[in-house]
Length: 320
Image (cartoon, rainbow, N blue to C red):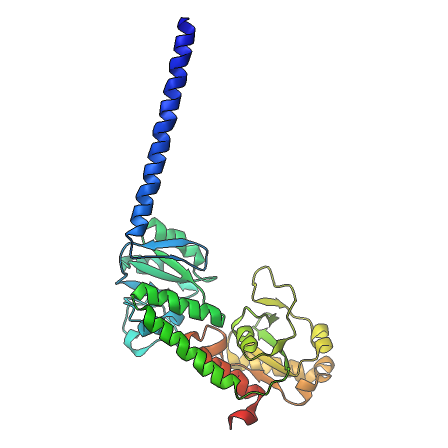
């Protein structure tokens, strides 16, 4: 009988313990929910992370120059910036520098005591955990495609407390792009986009900047459907055989590195290769190098200018 009573006491104690722990868990969830509800902003970033900001950020450090202009457009408070040869607004040139987009100096970022860091997806992801360990909120955003730029503008507007300014900026970009597209004939245009570096050549897919611009203009990218590289979802392996088989009407070339050197090497290869010479686009001088300031890093809120640049190359007579 004593054994039964003892066993009953043990079971009752275990049940009470479970109920207590369950109550604690529920209390923690309720507390987290309350904090979230009372927070300034909760967003899901491009890395799929849910980020909650307790207060409106007043000390923002963007880790790419592409974020600077849209932040200013929505009155975001920037306290430091990355180093870059282009894309730095005049009002930011005297701000403290924290390295370049490919090589961020974490110590310099942390010593500025930001209340928000904005990271560029695919470039700054590896730093997210370090900032989190230092209790610095991080929102990861992307600006390669036009849709990503518009979403980034929208999120930055929410961060700065000016969603109406963000909506107006997106509407203005839409209007400019629509005006450009209205100048073009309604016809299919097969294009190829090659990306040339000192090491290799790849073809650009719709997820790249140039691919997104071509898609906006309604061009048919001959690389559509090709499996992307494991290391880069915006690019695919280059194949001369595929290029000849698909026979693009126009070939656009983006580049990384010194433009003059890459252009010289690329044109020499085109001129001396029998395979290249079989392409009408080559024989008729419809091979165009796209400017790096628009097609290497994101043009950001200057996306309409990138769209017009490609449109002018394809249809120069429509923009005289």
